[in-house]
Length: 68
Image (cartoon, rainbow, N blue to C red; front, side, top):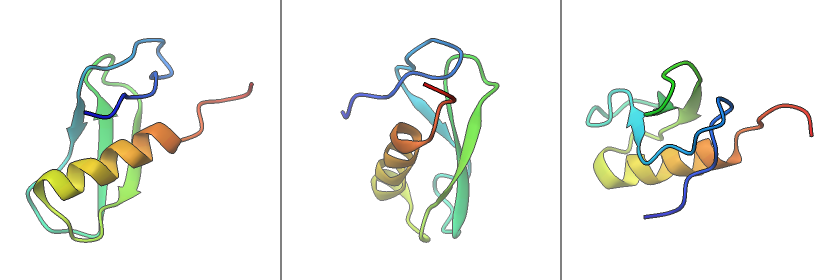
């Protein structure tokens, strides 16, 4: 599995929650299974299962996390 980026809460989640993972829709939400507060919307491209989860990981890892 690809390493996940740290959540803004300071925890690196071991897994992600993807809303509607098995439903083919254009946009979905992903959040870390840590604080349950921060989530992002990503373009799921009507993918499901592992393809959708790979897009969720890419979106999670590339999302801005505040000022550096």
